[in-house]
Amino acid sequence: MKRILIIDDHEVVRDGVKRIFDEQPGPTFFGEASTAQEALKLARAQAWDVAILDLSLGGRSGLEVLKELKQTRPRLPVLILSMHSEEQYARRAFKAGAAGYITKDSPRTELVKAVNKVIAGGKYVSPALAEKLVVALGRGTDHPPHEALSDREFEVLRLIASGKTVSEIADLLSLSDKTISTYRARLLEKMGMKTSAELTHYAIQNKLVD
Image (cartoon, rainbow, N blue to C red; front, side, top):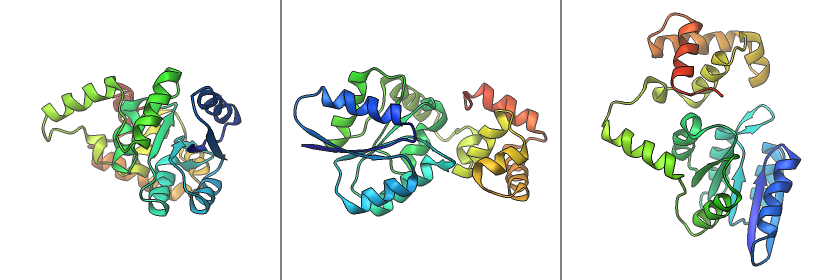
């Protein structure tokens, strides 16, 4: 029997994932969590074969939740199922301990394949992402500037680029305006830029925003 923990704040998505695996051979037991707190509680309470995790959980960064899950259950494979493209988050997710990354617009068969692979102890990357990783390896140490950002800095960069104000970002991340302004100043310094418009242009050029 497969034991799958589904962590997503949208009931429709959780139901959709359950339907896909209910159609597969053999029984499957599901756990469902719509918040980070519920996810960590279920992870502590029971053993799971795999956790399927969304990257957006009502204000909490999925990358933070991923790190906490791996601290709670180091051997639990976590598959990221996200609306965000692989260019935006896949590398960060793998660095944080993910066993695989798949987007929500992938075929149903691909999700089944990804889950089976990570349960078996493997890593799942799509053919498109695998090609990008090979190209990146070919560039050697020539990494784009945004890869040197912390996860929180990267999140703030994406929100600035999507047109959010300092106050809106502060509300979304439950931080103060002053803290967000500090992050913005740090971003500009790290990226070698002077304005939010430059950050936005860079993010769009590098497909870091939807």
